[in-house]
Length: 240
Image 1 (cartoon, rainbow, N blue to C red):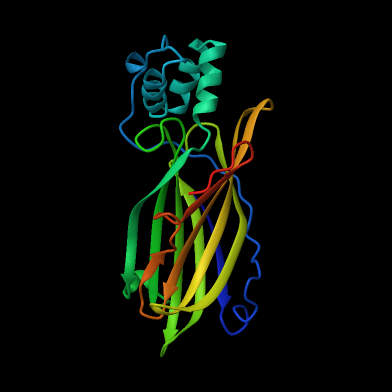
Image 2: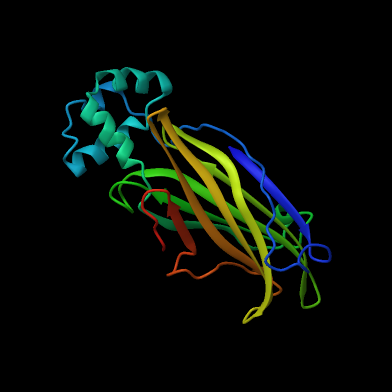
């Protein structure tokens, strides 16, 4: 699991609203979670032009261990391999889980509150189709009276598909405002994700999420057509 942290004190940082906080850069690999498929369950004769067949192959292929994937990959033809690469390009996202949305417990120590949000990123077929990785965005904050006085944010990815690397944060911005829920700090983080199967099959995605922590002790996803996610792709920009 790749993780990076930005710690910011409101007294010294949040006075410069709109400023960016540079993130750390990392590279990592991961294996998709779930029950492991076997070689015999993989149809290497799938038609790459049939979306349902490609999605079925993709899901079972990503359940294999590294050795199993290598063996199956060697059996694929050029068209099947290219279809697999294209299926990894981001098309949609879904905010699937909220962890500790209002946590004033040992989980938050040393902060008063912690909220962690999970976003699932999808390629071919969108939601329910090819899931390529999970993106996590966490905010921790302290409250004094009716003010948010200290903020720390984290971001990481899990269950990345084959050929995906996490290059860390490419943007992290904090902004404060007085909102309906009281004094609020918004955290916007952009992640640089690189798909690299070979020098000629490489592309980069920049999923961006915005969440907030408020003086009422609740963490929220900032509205963006309901899911707070903005995906920018070098080839086909998408806005949620």
